[in-house]
Length: 263
Length: 318
Image 1 (tube, rainbow over the protein chains, first blue to last red):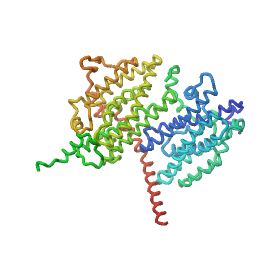
Image 2: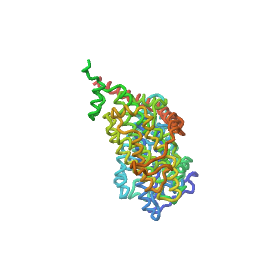
Image 3: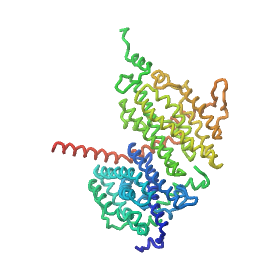
Image 4: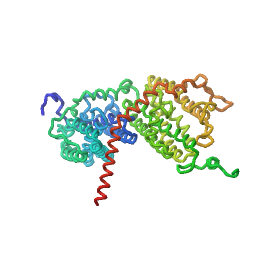
C-alpha cells in the first residue's frame, strides 16, 4: 500500500506511539464531528431536531474531552485537553476524512452521522472489553450515547429515503457522494498490528458495518454503492481535505489569538 | 338581572383568590389573547436568542467552555419548546406562532437584536441578559395561568444555572490578562443599557401592564423589576472590578436603592420597530433554516403517514 498520495508518511511506531495514535484516531473523530454537528445549532429543520442534533454534538465533544484528557496524561509535560484541541495543526489531526466533510443539507449530515455512528457502535462496543482500562471506562459511558446516535441517524436515513420523492433523491445522492469517504474507517494501519493483543483493529468491523448499512439502506429503499469502489485515504496519517484547515481555523482562532489566557 | 354575577367578575374573583387558571377553564378572550401574545413572545425570545450565542459555539476558546455554551443553547431550545406547548394549550398552533414571528407580527425580546462580536458577550449575556430574564421569570412562576407558571418553574432553575455560568465566564476574563479584562469591560459597556431596556417601557408608558397586573399575569411593574435588577447587579460588577457605564449611577440612602441614568427610549422604540443592528439578520436566519428544512419536514410527515397506512393495512389483514 505504497501509493503516491501517502508517500513519506510515518509508518514506524513504537508501542507507546501506537497507543497514542489509536487515541488520536478516536479523539479527533469525536472532536471534528462534534464541531461540525454543532453548526446545526439554530439551523435545524424543526425545533425538536435542533435539540436532538445539538445533543449528539454535545456527546461527541464530551467524549473528545475524555479521550484528550487521557492523551494529555500519555503525552505528559504541559499537554492538556485544550492544547491538543487548539494548538495542533492539520498534519497532527488523525481523524477520518469522513467527519471533516461539509455539513451540506440535513440529508448529507444525517448520512455522514449514520456512517460514523454505525462504525462507532461496533468499535466502542468492542472497546468495552479491551485491555486498556481508560478506554474501557470511556467506552462503557460512550456506548449508551452511541446506541442512541446510531438509532437516530439510521431512523433519519430511513425517513428521508422512504419519505417523499424529493427526499429520496436527495438522500440517495448524499449516500453516493459520501460513500468514497467510508472505506477509510476500516482501513488497516500499522498501529493495529502493534496493539493487536490489547485493542481491536478497525478492519475487524468492516463486515458488520457493511451488513448493517445494507440493512438500513434497504429499509430506506436506497441503493447501496459497492464497497469495492475506490475509497479515499489519508486522514489517519494527517493528510486531509482542504476542509479541515477551515474547521481548525475557526475553532482555534480565539484560543490562538490569546495563547497565554485561561478561559 | 342585577344579582347576576358576570363571568368576567367570577373570573376576577377566582384569580383574586390566587387560584390557577387551567386550559379548560372559562377565561375572558382578552386574557387568552394577552397570554398567547406574552407566552409566544417569550418562546420566540428563547429561539431567536439561540442565534447570538450559537455564533460562538464553534469558536469557544476551551473544550469545557464549548460544552457549557452548547448545553446552554440547547436548554434555550428546550425552553422554547415548553413555551410553545404552553401557548398551544390556549388554542394557538405552533405553525401560526412561527408564521407570526417570521412576518414580524409577533415580537421577541429586543435584546437579541444586538450583535455578539466578542467572546466576552457569552459571559455578559449569561450574567446580565439571563439575570434580567430571571428577575421577570421568578415573578412569572406565580402567574395566574397554570401551564405558563409550571413551565416557568422549570425554566427558572435552568436560567439561574446559566446566569452563574455567565458570571463565571466574565469572572475569568475580569481576573485574567489585561486583554481579557478589557474584553469584559467592553462587553459590559455594550450590554448594560440594552439589559435595562429588557424590562420594557417605564410604568407611565406601559399600555398592557395595568390589565395584566389585575389578572395576576404580571405581579410587579416594569420599573420595580428594573430597580431590583440594578440593585442586585451593581455589587456584582463591583466585585468583578468592572465599571457600569452610567455616570448617574449612585446609591440613594434615602430610597434604599441605586439611582440610575435615563434610558435612551428613542433607541428602545427604534429597535422594537425593527431598526436594531440585527433585527433583519435574526429573522432572515430563522426563515432560511425554516425554508431549508421544509423538504425534511415534508419527508418526515410522508414517512409517518406511510407507516400509519402500513400499520392499518396490517391490522385489517390480521
